[in-house]
Amino acid sequence: MNSIVETQNLSFNYNGISILSDINISVPEGKFISIVGPNGAGKTTLLKIVLGLIKNYSGHISVFGKNPYEVDPALIGYVPQFKTMDRKFPAIAIELVASGLMKKWPWKIRGNSKNLAYEALSLVKSEHLAERSLSTLSGGELQRVCLARSFVRNPKLIVLDEPATGIDAIGESDLYNLLENYQSKSGATVLMITHDWHVAHHHSDLVLLLNRNQISFASPKEALSENNLRIAFGHIGHKHNYKEEN
Image (cartoon, helix red, strand yellow):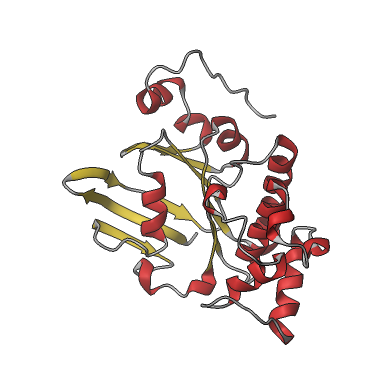
């Protein structure tokens, strides 16, 4: 099985402070990987390195067998943190989706670009939102549009930074169902930051648990053991014994 993301002793320091240290993972093609850790653990920094946004790291990382900043952007779909979105930006949903096709904002959407944007919205069952202003969308609706934007070029790697933040439980369930449906149809690999251990346990093939250092990269049951969670988070209040799935 091909490795989509591979690291060897990957580390990153900022102003003399260690943000990531000795990350060693191999992400198999077509798998769902969750990245779990406390605030300040280096999770978003790791995603930025994968996306080629941070280059002054040490160690090794390859994405699709290349340096991250050399990868064709069409291979990667990105869903940022919900709180980074400017809801007041004067745009409609289909423009946001189409922006995933271009390097600049698509003030006019024509022809094939418009067709592809509608197809992406249909994947998340949101064609009816195409002409809606972003400011009128609920949290769940906006996150669906962001997900459609990440799908618009049929990427082989979907990268998500806490995608469920700011949406309700129903919207969160819909989000993961849509993501898994896309993955099953396309064979894409998913790399997702989540603060929710239960989500990571339920949806993931593998979990990377870290707190600047790598604590575990293994199956959800192994990575999210009581001992590993205590190493990552300190005192966690009570035991989290996950049930075996039949």
